[in-house]
Length: 121
View 1 (cartoon, rainbow, N blue to C red):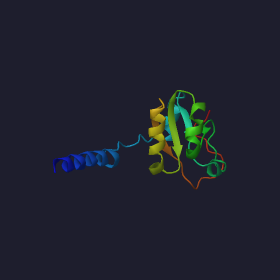
View 2: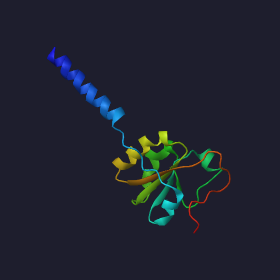
View 3: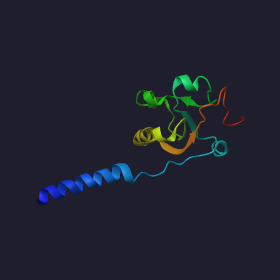
View 4: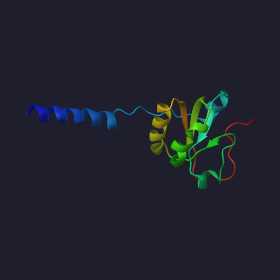
């Protein structure tokens, strides 16, 4: 009986850690990205979306290819550009485990067309 209670407690702690204790992602505005040029902009949108509206000066690695190509990124502070914030948490966790510092996330509007410029250089 005690073993069952201990197992249920361990499962409860695991589920609470996994689903409840999520820290919010540090969202940023485009003006905040422009203030410090040492940050690297990483575009995690799919190729078919980022092709229609590319972000100038960003690294375009879709989320599905991140584990394969993360080594191409410089070891600087990263700002992630994405379409939907709810899908980026696993990518942020993966990059942090690889030693990257995620300083912010920008949500890009899906309906925008043409080339997007985050900073006027």
